[in-house]
Image 1 (spheres, helix red, strand yellow):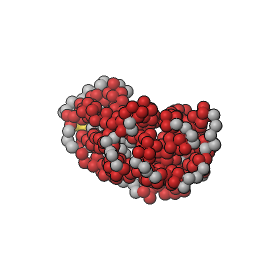
Image 2: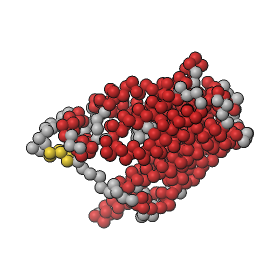
Image 3: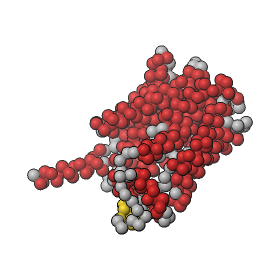
Image 4: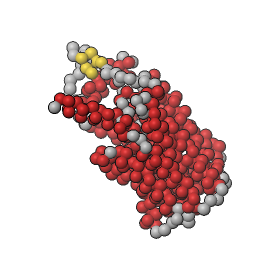
Length: 428
């Protein structure tokens, strides 16, 4: 009988067909989460006309799904420890997909808002993998361009029911976490999963299985403010708040703002596609540059460039230039949000990284809820169109200023590098 450390087996395994399957399913799930992020903005101009909504009412409806995300994160996050991540993913996917699908059958704003809230309950848990957000965000307006003229706005929500058809296959192929299988005594399932993770290894049900526990998982939030990290923590919170305000505000109101600027519905939906495309390109390119030059050096000008792009959008101009400005705005908002999460994870010690990222994301979600409301309020007071874009540009400058003041010297990696350098000097 040998001893198997499940954590080490998973960490040391080589990428194979099993991992590829997990990657595809994860991408598929988060793709539809990204689809949900943009789908409301896609149909918003049509709903305002159909239901005679005021801009404030439309903005309020946009926040209901985000409220659902907050409640879902708390409830299902706790439930996952009891019934397993796999079961919770299935439950939340059903909630998200089913109630987004039912939005397409809503005949009143009240019913629509209720379904959006219930869909939001299932959306937060499956938002672990971020790479599919922008792809899903492109699908929503793209499908809107082709389907809405023929099948109406409802068809955009019906498409969100597709995951329900594939759920049985996905549930069969997705594994449960090793720690849950160990805790619940499901050794045979664990051995079968580890054999898929690492086919070159040989496992037996007679082997003793242990799971390496993470240290420091119960560190209180006060750890974010120790060792001169208080100022940095607050600045990260401000950056997250400002950035998500722009992300959710733009995804909700960009088509309507562009229509106010004189563009047709299809052209306005095209701008949503440009926004998400810019986010993908920005994440890939800026992410690589961050590895080379440092996250802070790239993120600060990235936020600032987004503010400049949004300001210039309000003054119109050549259509090609407008698309380019929208793409830059996507890279500087959605793309920057993806990258800044990695920066926060690296800034703090391993024992409090999850806490740091979780709290910052929670604060940012508050900004996300204000984004749709802010856009609705601005349109309701009939400001000149360029002032609406400037209002969404200001948070970008705030995020850039906040991040620029984060002292690198207090970063965990910086301190470790300094210690290593000092040790080498002493040895030599």
